[in-house]
Amino acid sequence: MSDTEQDPQEQTRTLASADRPPQLKPLRRLVPFLLRYPVRLTLTIVFLVVAAVASLSIPYLAGGFIDDGFVQSNLEVVAGYAWLIVLIGLVMAVAAAARFYFISVIGERVIADLRGSVFDHLLTLDATFFDTNRVGDLTSRLNADVATIRQAIGSSASLALRSLILLVGAVGMMFLTNFQLAAGVIAVIPVMVLPLVYMGRRMRRVSRLTQDSLADLSAMATEALSSVKTIKSFVQENEQRRLFSRFAEASYKAELSRLLARSLLIGLVMFVAMCALVALVWWGSLSVFNGTFTVGELTQFAIYAVIATSALTNMSDLMGTLQQVAGATERLIELLDTEPGLPVRSDPIALPEPARGSLAFEGVDFTYLSRTGAPILEGLSFAVSPGETVALVGASGAGKSTVFALVQRFYDVRTGTITVDGVDVRDADPAQLRRRIASVDQEPVIFAGTIADNIRFGRPSATMDEIRAAAEAALVTEFVTPMPDGFDTVVGERGVMLSGGQKQRVAIARALLKDAPILLLDEATSALDAQSEHLVQKALERLMAGRTTLVIAHRLATIRNADRILVLEKGRLIDQGTHDQLVRKGGRYAELARLQFRLAAAEAV
Image 1 (tube, rainbow, N blue to C red):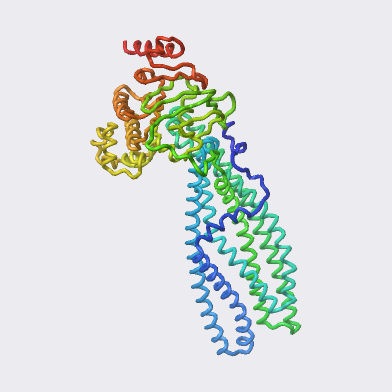
Image 2 (image 1 turned 180 degrees about the horizontal axis):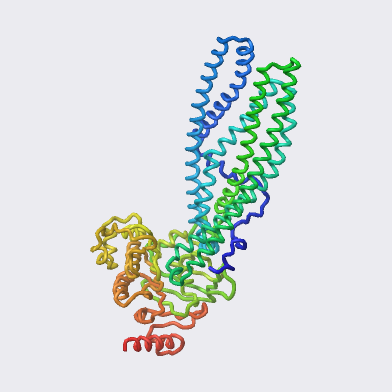
């Protein structure tokens, strides 16, 4: 992670940038999630309207309270108005509490649905998407952006709608109270709205920048914390602290810009609203002195003016929140709108039953879209018969791991075809195709659950007896038995509590449980010591029995018994045969064999 690669101000983004016309349109995409709950939404609106109407009725009663009660010195009228206001206050309190409950429940439900939809969609995207987008940025969108949206749905949206109702209702009642003064209010509103619109547009731009900066910070922290051993090994703690500080500072500056814009918006609207309110009260006072307006009517009008001003001020404040939410929503919608790069047929061809386990490459050319330069594979052709064990040999970058990725259709070939059991992988259902393939990698993925959970990953419906049988065959039981919790032992994130050999055997048990006809072994023993390699090799022999197997191995001693060995160089097949045939023939494989066996003999001495 060099400074050049990680400069917070020069991030190259695969997804959309912040330089877009400011708008609240992304919020429309939240509407379908809200409409899934029509009953709760209707109740929310009903209680919202009831609470707003109750609030607007109190100023109307206040006018009569003053004119008919205080001015006329009629205590009985004052008491009557007081009890009526208390009753209305009770209705308003109950309606407000119910509104808060229902909108909060809807907010939590919508957030759960939205997060689930985004996560589900991410799982449908192809490998190229994850090659070009950082996991930290994606998790930031799922967590930080969703939390921002929760604020809007759970409170801001409700307050905005309440403020709008109060604003419209208060202005309407002001017209009923005194038309001339109300007309003055209408004349002032554009003066208040214009800065609101202008500052709101700026708010969205800086809000999007804030979310992007936070995503950069999250991505850097995720990468660093997941590689903490490497950082310590190279004594790069200070460099990582400095790098994190730069990202944090960039996030702080972006947030500072947002807060400044929002503060200016709030202050400007409040000042204009207060000036307008003072002017209107002054004008109303002149009407009272002239005898055209009663004290009660002026009080009533002033309270409605305060309600309207407060509602407009709240809306200006909420507008800043909604602009921030729009930016967060846009970032999530970008994920939902991202189309998978691998097309899937609407009428896929079914793979034959029972599965045979044959596969073939015919004139395959391939280049990663995320890379530039020479093709990874060129004109690659070979076939593997059911039950055959074929090894792939070649220098790093020869295309061996790419062959494995293409067999599972993580990517599509540029030209040529790949068939499994006679069906082009592009015509098959990807899920059905991958069910026929099991893999054991050089560094197997171990999840932060129990040993049983990790084995069950091969077939979630498996019983505990089936898990134990797979573990026994993969020689997992011998290291699980001494553990106090047995198969319920938690292995930690990425299997940190297990050794390399133990991880490999758990991965082999997982593949055994999947019971797929095609097996892919990618350097499954290269990183192990001699004892662990012996145990893992025994487990692999049981796994390979009766299955079509493709093996990648740099250590040629592990593939001497392969039915056939394919020698790859720069994406081309340059030779093939058994170990003995290739050694007798000479060439690249013979050179590799002589070198490795000579080194092995020297180490033994």
